[in-house]
Structure formats: C-alpha cells, structure tokens
Image 1 (spheres, rainbow, N blue to C red):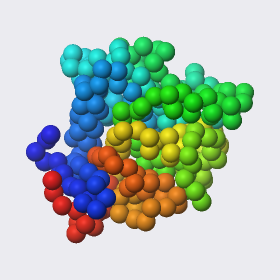
Image 2 (cartoon, rainbow, N blue to C red):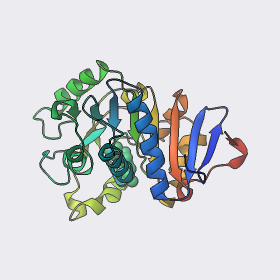
Image 3 (cartoon, rainbow, N blue to C red):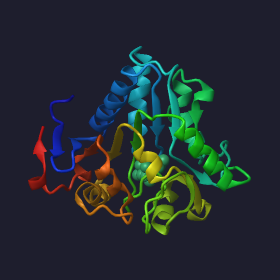
Length: 261
Ligand code: F6R
C-alpha cells in the first residue's frame, strides 16, 4: 500500500474507498487487490471489466505475471459484457479488448476465458447460457468500472435492478461516452449483452475502479446516495465486501460520513 493513498470507510455501509493521487497509483492498488485474491485461492474465478478505467490495472497484473508473482494457469474469468451485434474479431469488441490488454500477455488457458457472445444468433438464449455458466461458479472477485450515469456492466439506469445476464438497449449518454473508441458515433452498437446487477452481486468481493472528474457524481451517488436502480452502482451498498479504488478527481465524498481506517 502506497503511503499517499487515503483509505476511508463508510461505517454505516461498510464500503471501503482507497483515494489515490493519480492513475498509476490507482492501477497498482487495484492490481494488488486482485493479486491478493488470486494468491489466496487455488482456482481463482475473476469477473472482469473493459473500458479505459481498468487498462492500467491489467498492465500492472501483466507486470506481476512477468515478475513471477502471479500465475494465471488456474484462473477462470468471466467478462461483464459485450456489444451486440459485434463479432469477437472486431477490434472494437470487448473480446478483442481483453485479448489485447490482458489475455495475450499472461498464461491463462483459452477455455478458462469467458466473454458474452455478441454475435450469437439468439441473444436471449446466449444470455441464459451465460448466466447458467455463472451460476455454476462462485466468483471470488468482480472488477467493475462505472459509467458517468452510474451504470455497472451495461446495466443502465432503469426502473428495477436486472437480476441476470440480459440484452440491453444502451442509453444515448453511454453511446456518446463510448463513441471515443469508434470511428464515428454511428458505428457504436445500440445494444449489448450484460451480466445483471444480480449476477454481479453474487461475487464474494467487488472492486470498482474510477478515475477523472467525469466520474465524481456517479461515484458519490453510488457510495452515499439512495439505493435505486436509477443509479445501478448504488446496489453495491447492499454487498458485504466492496472496495472502490478511485483517484482524487473521481472523489467527491461528503467527508463527514467517512472515517480513515
Ligand atoms: C465495461 C463496462 C462498463 C464500463 C464503464 C466505464 O465492461 O462494463 O460499465 O466499466 O462504462 O467505462 P470507462 O472505464 O471507459 O470509463
């Protein structure tokens, strides 16, 4: 743990927050939490996320693997989500992202890697099959990013929390936020397949990473606001073991509710 990381806990809600001075520190801290879970389980099962937030975390995990500290040969992974329709070979797919940001650089076995199929002929069936695979395992840790609108996975603000893997219509704000990864906004798929909030909440431990001021409001609402499906990440307040690793810009906490630990 770096000395300049502020560790806070919201006593009422039992959520831990590590506030890091910069993205590099955040990435090292998050990778350290994942490494701890990998080292304390013989056959670790990890839920993984894509997007810009965890890129540094994956870079750090690769470094720990290259240094001989981590071994991925017994690790199984399940990714949160995938665009629909998009083939795994498409360089904007989350399949492709995971290959190029983590899987190609560590000794994970291909059959142990699971990413929802964004190209399945029957998406409802694909969602049910993915959820069935998830329910056969206990995820030791689920890594999350958070959308500016409070989404986790592709669970967008809604009237109720989605229990299981499902097909989602992406909101305009998510399409606009993700357009930066595509040639034009028209190329951003309008749908996705995503684990539900219920699937995420079954993980034993949840680790959320967020950086930059565009995330500050969503982080605050998730940690301190009302628990509501209008802010999907607020469901995490009901989980017994959640850690947020965020940078100072993403931190807009009401300090009076938090104590150092
Ligand atoms: C990605 C995912 C999304 C992202 C979120 C934040 O698998 O599930 O919920 O975590 O959109 O994305 P970034 O990190 O790009 O800001």
